[in-house]
View 1: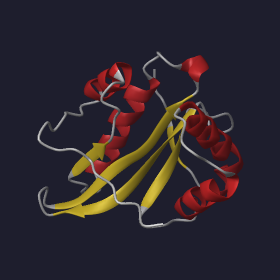
View 2: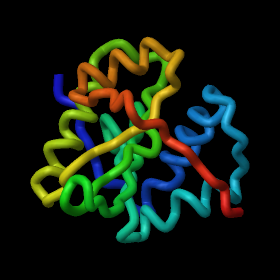
View 3: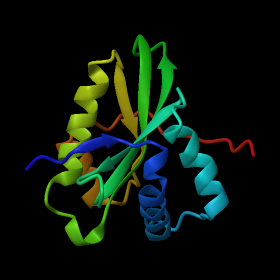
Length: 150
């Protein structure tokens, strides 16, 4: 199986937004159309801070991945963070998310990204197993902390 990763652009917003809305509903993330548009559209317009990829057939995507970029002294250069990854429930369990994350890591490595990070619910065994299969490792000494600014 080959799960196609397509770099999304503004033409993909109408396909991407319902997937993001479904992910947010499933994960109980507060979400509204205006906030999603503010978060998605700059990525589709070429923001240097991140990118959105649709997964599967471009005309009927089965999911998406959003990655954002930063800088790490510890890792010696640019790093990236998987902000969101989602596969439609009807097609889960077929290895698409694993394949997409491995493909994304290879693509980012080819453009000199030194590390790829993500956040996972400590109690979500299924997601943790997916991320382990995709090459991610827990950093037991570290915990993601957030200070909301707005």
